[in-house]
Length: 371
Image (tube, rainbow, N blue to C red; front, side, top):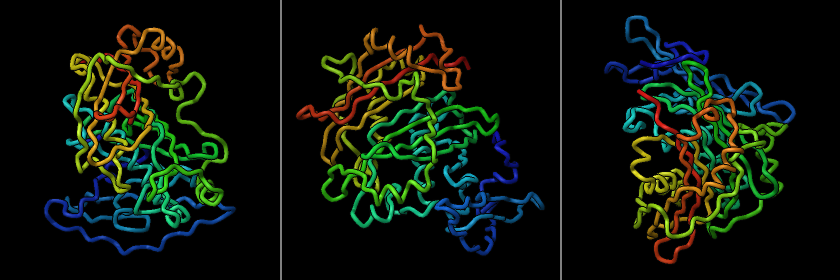
């Protein structure tokens, strides 16, 4: 049963399946795309909604919006000011784990998807992650430098979530992208995330400063004043992650990238690293706790033939207490959890051969809710 609100009727979220009950649905003719307009600010697109009438049980698809067929079937659009983007997603059966709730990898993939769709909605590339015209000309791409995700309540199979995202400048060397995740049935904020991205030359694989030309291309689509999904005051999202030294409390050695782990930019997708980090979490924690917060620093690309070791250790008490003091509630119930039930870990992904650091991380786990 779908749980829906977010100002959308059940008819409107009928999933736009063109072969509903075995009969193809006619699609309407495309309408022209509206152009961006005044003072460098884009006009917001009309919501892209796929509606199936309930008349006669079959009905016909009525789609508003413009662009490709994919654009028409997405439940997403720019907000009225054109400076952020919202999209709704149904949690599928193959996106949940043993608890019938979405996995953290699913949530990270949805964050990535809505970020890419935001970039496409303002006219950026369809062949990479949010590359501007100047970036494509110079063979430049964005790569993740840091990802921080807070999950206050996991959506279950069949739930509908709405994710809002926006980006903004972050000094001279990169950009920042933030997200807010809501349960459409209740309007409750169930998660927040923030990330930092750096620019890399796709051919040389070297990092590069963000030029004024590139900055001007994307800043017109960014909020004029800083807007943060996770306020930086009293937040652990910016806190430095120390390098985990041997011997680790637990480990998973000899992880090898699969072909499916590589993305369109020819490197291991940032979500794959999350899975590798979780591989070395002790099984007793997986059985009794669920992930509340994850922060990852991405330090080195993983190549096709690399072999990776995943190391995990309990965070030292002094560091854990410092994180606890920094951890705000951010509008969630997370800050009110029993501190004795929380478990905190430090993580390291490294190359098996020479020990070079690929990724370091910190996770916080809370007791699983009674079901």
